[in-house]
Image (cartoon, rainbow, N blue to C red):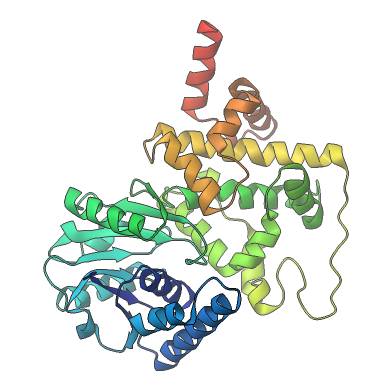
Length: 386
């Protein structure tokens, strides 16, 4: 018999993880303090299963079985027999710590306690309970049933047994797992920061408008969505908060500095698709802006953002955040980049990437554009031996 799984938080992410676990055959307990949220999650799961039946991807019997495996609850005591509990609530460290303290009183001694946080310290969360070696980060990407990547983040307290059991479990759910060091943003939310930040900087400098930047990144760069489209999809409140969290956690490193442009959008309530207005207007009848499709300008935009992304990937590798393979896998499977950034760097040429970064640094004299030590070392090595 498969172990029972507990999920805390019946929002989009929590209910999505519950669906993934149920589809893998686990009995799932979905907890929330809000009864209406639980009812909404139940109805949402039924709608999703009905659509899968209509499309021929599930039989009615399979759909009914999955629905029947998800049980909603208002009490932590329902987690008594769970082998794994995943927290997927608000990105607030103190709130998460309180939840984990309450959890420890209800679950078995060998139950793994995981957080779905996208950027907060797993070590800090683990320190809130007595048996901290069973705490780990298990970060899904939205929507959880569709996105293949899951970041596994052991804290300094996490035992090797907890890490291995957690990874094996998520692998068994058909997900692509990568192991990341417990540093701000882990892999994806650290490496991807320039995709948003440098795009906004280009806009603020008046080099191109939002529509032109998005067009360039899609049509020339090969990305599925442009940065402004993606920020509107994620939500400017969420994207800004992650940026600010990473920036603060890295002791205000200029590479991760948030922008006033996005802060003002958040303050105005222009959060993107969910509010009907963000960088673009999503109201009924609104016309999409026509981008300036100047190829020369577009290529410059793509190159500037790309070398900043490559620089982040190289620095993550240099500082041991993850392996080369996991960094590239994370960016292709977690945010649908057209190829791994380190692979991209090899194809473009390390020296060319380094020259591009140095050119930006000379133009701005900002630490934001400092090149990773790894890029310099690798370029020097190739000059010497090749």
